[in-house]
Length: 350
Image (cartoon, rainbow, N blue to C red; front, side, top):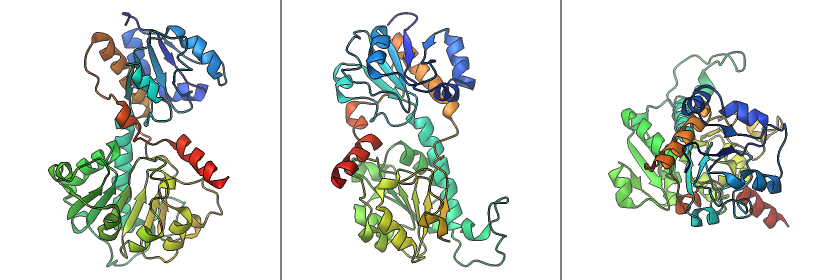
């Protein structure tokens, strides 16, 4: 790679550029003295044109809305060495053949995952302390509910269940440790029982997790295989008084079954993600007293650092140093891919 790498940011909107190329990321770009070539046309660029633009690229930066990098997009390029994803999952943006080319792929996912984990812990505490029934939040909620509440619990009295064990779950586990939960159980297809035990968890079967946990985090990758995996059977097995938290993706849980079970008032549902966003005002979730809803912002908080981290990865690649956030093909295929999920959903409706 050249001393001054040719870097292209595949942004499809100026707002995306403004959101990520600011603060520490802008300062890091200036410090490195690199020019980042961007889409400043005011609108999206067609794939064929992108293929021409990036013909001499040494490094690419992708983000939400970027065209998928595959052999077609790289038809004119023979110099690409690294792709830094300014976001979370790389699955919708990096095709398998890119890994076959020997191109390194790295992502700012750990930064977003840490913010998501912080939201998980906040929502967990709100749930077990029944904040939705007790607190007044500015002018947006009911008056405070005074008096003793015999159902408020502390973390050390709870079994915490985690479905999936990726970056978010790793951060959640580290944040839980000082709270000394009674037990942490995990259901994961790629984490062995031995590895779980080394991390201080007990591995259980998928169905067991929902029946045994007092707090359930659904943090599995949003793949076609995981779509709707939480259905009537799992929801019915949830303990009375438990807390179900989904900041992963809405299609992990079957929506009709979820609403039906929540209407029974047996447990609290906390959601940062929804089938349709923004959530329609007439959606049944808006009418339930046993829910806490947040507007899909769990990952927000460190966005201004994403691009800086990816520039540092490009610098490490240029210097021949190990990458800190590299993703290999096997891991990429386990990450959330909403494009594939939506395509599968459309196919089943036809």
